[in-house]
Image 1 (spheres, rainbow, N blue to C red):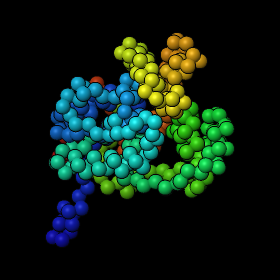
Image 2 (cartoon, rainbow, N blue to C red):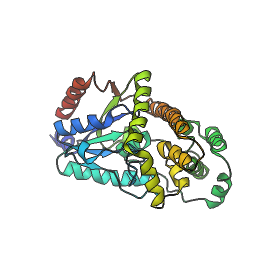
Image 3 (cartoon, rainbow, N blue to C red):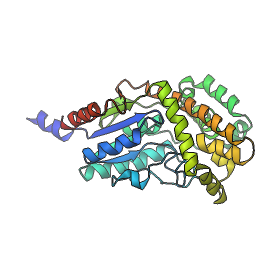
Length: 308
């Protein structure tokens, strides 16, 4: 009897994670799941945490939310650097709030590091800034920094944005302090997790990526970048934010023309999708589905998971 009571009181809360590469339909599926299973969505996207990065980050609109509460969106100013540890701290509060209200938690996104850290409730070493090391690393270009990271921590180099100087420098700073960039430990998760992965064939994925870029530009994505600059966000910081903002900043500075911006962004986004896939391959618990063809099956799996 004591054993039964212990199991009841130590039962892990359930969490649904919807993940996958960019442009696979994660957002729309997460909203459908939330509406069907009385849930709320936590965004696990490293750029959607920033205010004003809307079209460029593919941020869900209030109309698209369709009444479904969303968390971890617009939580900080883009001038600030938002760490994984901050995401875990604030995201955990959101999880607890959702569970307290007896709603289902749906984590949705493509930033693997954020998802793993939040689901496993990871803590990270509080490595303070090493300004002496930073001054040395800042003199190197991104290629040199990436090569150095690959030499010191090959695993981390396979998932990092090799064009993001801030992240490269920070990774090397952590390695200098603790010897490596800590990896998540899925065995210690305080939650019972269902991982729903969305996957498309390469041809469809690349077409989606291109169409998404063109559509966002038609919707005013370049004007968004202009407004961010007008409101005080430097081109340097914009480039650090990666992908769309990097190429728009280069275009607005006159370094590349409009066609080069689109072509460069297409290539960089495909490379980003490949890195996402590399990260997700590490997790054998992910069940992979086609976002349209397998939608009924996804819903049945989620229903069974929640009833167990």
